[in-house]
Image (cartoon, rainbow, N blue to C red; front, side):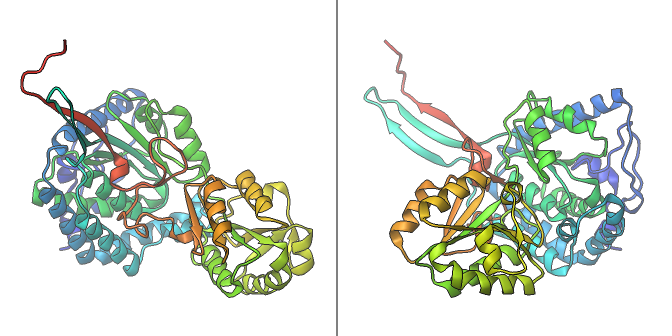
Length: 458
């Protein structure tokens, strides 16, 4: 019998609270679990209980050894591989329900798990295990004239409330990166990925029980009631950070309601700018990868900006290539002249994150005009320049106000794994406290530890 079949919700209650009924009582085995419903009073009690448990777990987790955290990550990866088919079967239930939720093709792609993607999740956990543990790192030591030694020491944030939509792989990524950085996490996944996330959490719970990870280090909210999100967002006494990952509507709701700091980006309107000195073959390759390698993700290119000096040669060719891949071009007058199948672009088109087979295009007369266009319409996520002019590259990098600037490289590289951070918990376009891919260090803070030998202040 596979691990998912023998993993029981009683185990989850004591460890990860995946489907713990709000009214109490014993859960049936995983395959029969149903999300709970609750009265307003019970919902208050439930959310308070989950948050308080997470806060207590965070205190213990802050002192959990690196060895135990890494054992959990590696054992979780083993179980994901061993029970891959069980995860795919659970995911199939979510995919069957997807049309009823009105999911787009891009959303269904993000929801889909197969053996390759499950293997990628497992590898991601192992990569996080291989990363240095940031907790306890002495960032800086200062010796004062009076003999005091002042250490600036990295510490966990505490409890993370993570709200995400139909990305079941994110369940494992978020749990892994939070626990490795010493934080307890409360997971609120979307109903679209319910069965997939339950299957993954069951395996994480099994691994936790085996290695002795603190109880309640990871909890999954067991109600689909949207009011629960608001209740958690109003608990700064228990929760130290909220991270929404999903559609713009979800992120704006969290940003508006949260009583604690929020790490976020609203959308990913990413640009590729082809400069006058660009290697056009390179520009074609990078643009196609940025746009077409995977369209439904936040670091996919949504906008093309081309210098007028190379537009006549570049746009007809790239227009044909995009057309062959089913991508519609919406552009200015010059783009429409050079790409016959292109449609006229509006201001809204230039500001849109399509997450699908549409790209906007603008021909500009200078680097200054390109930078002005990108800063006006972009989302401060990821923007790329293709150029052989080092001065232009440096100016672009300095003046583009985005979390990541790519020079002669695809926008798709703005990703925690690609940056060597291990799996990320999200990408921030804010400027405080974290920006860009948020890995282990971005989920930490610091404290000052002062060593003395009896000093007093005069």
